[in-house]
Image (cartoon, rainbow, N blue to C red; front, side, top):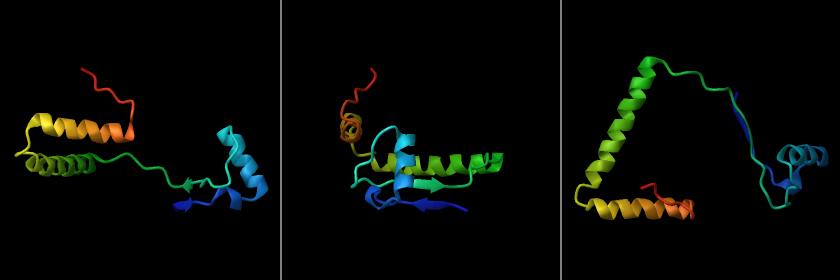
Length: 95
């Protein structure tokens, strides 16, 4: 069974908080949320599942590609770089 627990640090029992801080190697701030997830490990995909996943990925990529047909390559590359930089400010493309 999968489970997810997301308490704020200020609501943790002292012994639970101490154990989590020991695992993290730092003190928790009271306003931080702690996410703890328990789940059954995924099993390896069968060959049929792998083929189906590739088929679905290919379909998704074709849909994205069809939406880019009227946009110049330089323009959508710049849009992509802007999106990457918004989540990774120090990102520099390898060229």
